[in-house]
Image (cartoon, rainbow, N blue to C red; front, top):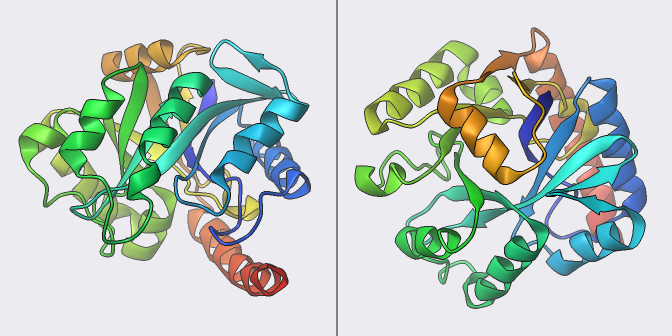
Length: 253
């Protein structure tokens, strides 16, 4: 099973969720041989509820995923924390939406939820909790307390960071931190634009249908991360097209 644990369904936070745009992303994911994605849209994106309301209206929900034209789409979100950093939370739809409601008071910069409190809230249900791009200069995680980082299920080896910092350097940073803390590493393309799919994928030894199955596979090491030989081209092209499309779409909003 091939899955990308860090993807977005919108080009940017400011634009509306578009089913047509989302289906373009789904098609691109399939063309890059992905069987599944975790849809980790920003928790404070414009009209967050539209994302899952739309999916509910158009696609069946089975086990812990939406069946979207042959692609498994697992619900998730990317959460900003007070100390600076982004945390990916992936879980059953009802659990995820309940957690999102609890985050209503924390959506604005300057009032983000403390890391420890987010971990506590996430522990109330079965979530896969991943530390996003731990060495990104704007939103690092490596500065946080080790005992809190150890409560994560994994760190994110991120397509954008691999491109900007270099595969060798960023991989060394992330794997070194993961070894120090004692947790695994999983891959995420951080796709906002379809050209970025396939930059980084996880190849699991088993086909997972629930969050628990993912957690078990990751903990047991029953997977490998594949970094595309075309990572630089994929991310660079997506970055440029995203910039142009973002300017156009945000003018409409």
